[in-house]
Length: 215
Length: 215
DNA sequence: AGACTAAACGGACTGCGGTCCGGATATTAT
DNA sequence: ATAATATCCGGACCGCAGTCCGTTTAGTCT
Image 1: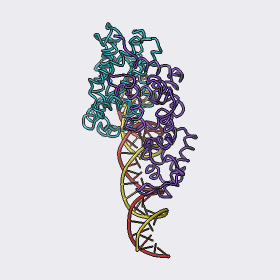
Image 2: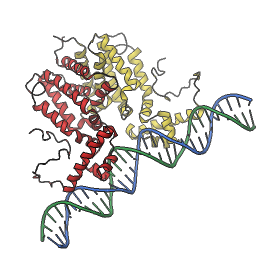
Image 3: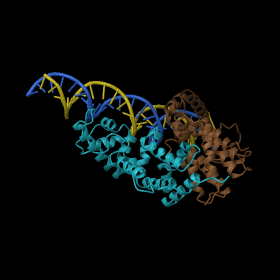
Image 4: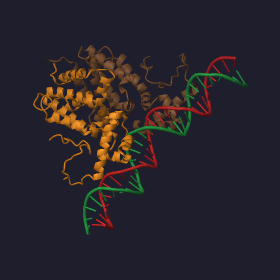
């Protein structure tokens, strides 16, 4: 289990050889399913050829041999397309920090889990950063995206578990800000900061935030 | 003094009744100056009428009675236009935290200056948030913008002054992230967080970051 | 004044994200 | 098989940011 889309990420992620089309509200039409496959395949090709930033909705439609309208009906927007491309990796990451083994998953002290969460997130961004950035960019409400909300809540929960009592919601917002793909990628690619240094700085940050203050 | 553009923000900010056109590299041509005035005036009108997000380069050109090319030559991009509109407030803010009275300016302990910096920045965003967001949005290198670099360096300097010895550059990046207009505006407008609560959370954050850790 | 040149002008043009709606098609009921 | 219908398809269309280049004009030199 648990690989099956923990949160509703987007329509059209997993091809789903699942035979169960039991959902009452009309199953997917066969041509729609075929086009979804074509589009996802073409999208991955294009990402490999042009990079995430080089993928345009028009090129994707042409490559997949469908109309532009079809692309937008399927993914809603460019950001939606990118999220769909990320959904497998995203679901896997979510599974790991929610149900996986410690120190990332439950069982370890909250501080250790926070440190591990940041480290994993940094590695995630190093691997899928282009897509992640494209998925957030130009999304008017990037903070409302289900995945972002889940991360925020997770951090907030860990803060509370660590007896951080001063506005955990806002502190989780600050910590989330530190882990944004845009910023991390800039640090690494433009400022030539090593991922290891990012992880170390994250560790320093959360230790100081969670640790008791001396009065 | 010190109101005169502490850092090179953009061409075409202050009308400059300054008679000193001593700069060797060719002074501004009269028609260019006239158009700059027209454009800035029209831009402020449009911002008032449509809000910052409702201002398009085409509308601005039409309103000012100039060609679209002229708008882009003057401001470079939409983000450049927004920065120009912000430049006065920005320069004033810079003057305050660099040379103004404590606790924001020099003279106060670094921690107090950090707290004051965040508080002032939050108030700034509450007032000019629309413009600030528009100035950063869609700017591929928002982190390279002169103003952003200056804030970063200022925070980094205060961290060092407060004897924060573990990677002040990256910690300044994290703290800057907390103060981004996009995030702050979302917290206030969507999540209904009060500015005062933002300031308090910022205070909590910097106190914990700068304060000594207990081992 | 008149010629010369560098700068500024303006609007047509491109490429993009996103929308719309008339037409095609898969599915279901008869 | 045929008809009915909900869904899906496609590409023309829109508004926008940003570019390009032929034309105009301000400042200067003689």
